[in-house]
Amino acid sequence: MTTALSARPDVAAYLQQMETLLGLTLDDARRQELLAQFSRIDGMAAPLMAFPLDEHQEIAGVYQL
Image 1 (cartoon, rainbow, N blue to C red):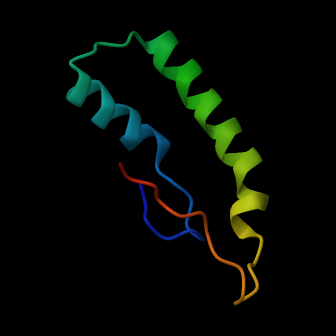
Image 2 (cartoon, rainbow, N blue to C red; image 1 turned 120 degrees about the vertical axis):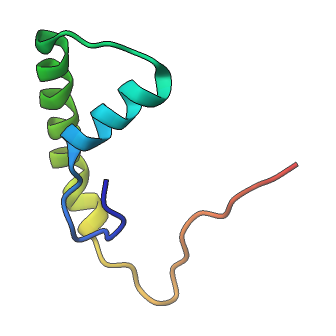
């Protein structure tokens, strides 16, 4: 995954990392479907993430107990 908002995430690398971290073994069909779904999600989120915020607008705060 990349950290810059303007760069596209590496979905395949993300899935591989999550497989390793969660101790999962995905078959090729499941992996391909997840790649397709995450790519769709990325495509839907791209316009929102690219929307410029006015300098007077702030991102949502982080609430802690």
